[in-house]
Image 1 (cartoon, rainbow, N blue to C red):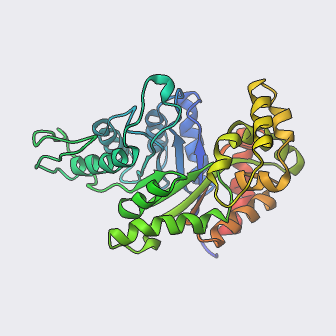
Image 2 (cartoon, rainbow, N blue to C red):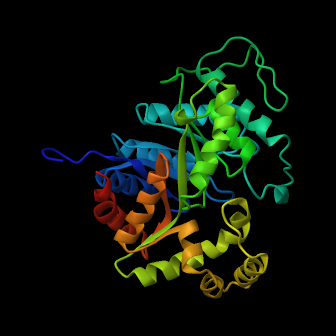
Length: 338
């Protein structure tokens, strides 16, 4: 492209964990925008900081980049509060917000047993939209509902904020086909999963009279990029070892030996991430992480987009050091897509 700045890589995004000092996020957001990422996300993981303060800091320091939480869940944050948070983020960012929703994980230990999760997500979306649009009628629901007196007591910037649903599952993917703009599969870098998710989305899209292609598919996973590809992949193996025993069984395109997953899980529980990671072969690593040199990571992202995904999201830790990883992603990976 000639003249002016390169267009942003709209199909590439970056995600940050909410474990940093609040002052760090503005700088990270500026760097992400300077490198021309299309979207920046902040995780909403259990027992980490809520994503909203970080996102507000990024919103105040940036001008163009799209941003949102990936993801909030309606069992720990009521949809009424979710509506308020996303309205605040959308206003602070001048209409650049998106809302990520998921059913949540590891909630049993908090005494929360999600009832009817698909219904809950459906009704959470309905509650948020009803409030943002200034609906005046009552909104009955089996899990979440509103009375006719439940209205936001302040103006909102946009009546409709794009919704992303985070899931690996058939039923929530179908729901996304009905009500969402995107589906994100967190923890996957597997191109073969894209057509599977497209088929699942299509079932719901048909019910809602939508074209399945209206719903974008996002694959996001641990990302470690470095000029030393072997070191990057060794670090990525350790990170993937933390979640592979949980997510490997969710991918219908792969058959991973249960005994291998049990050995990885045992090593992680002993605190030996290096031993757990060493059990992950190269081909398996490439299905669950973006890892290696900038060229290797670019090829992985290209394969996912070629399979029909709408977006690739590079997750933490990004590199052997976070800022060097962000720099290499921005300077050496994104130029492949401008």
